[in-house]
Length: 83
Image (cartoon, one colour):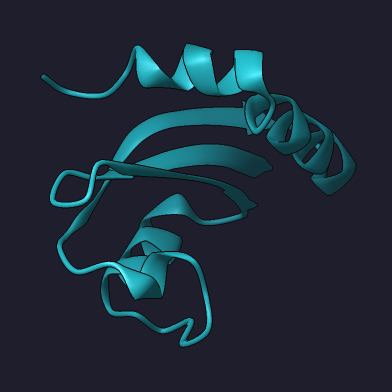
């Protein structure tokens, strides 16, 4: 099982969309800045999981990730941002 997820940084009002096998572990990695040269490590503040979707294969996860990164996909994800 794979997951497509969206995380949100309230300090900088940024969204990141990705895919993984373990959302909780990946969220901890984003918040600990484990990925030194990544998009999420550039911003201070805590990343919060705002959206998660399960898919069967990694290929499906990559396909769905591309959809969510499109303009319409980002508009869909923005509805999950806490006010």
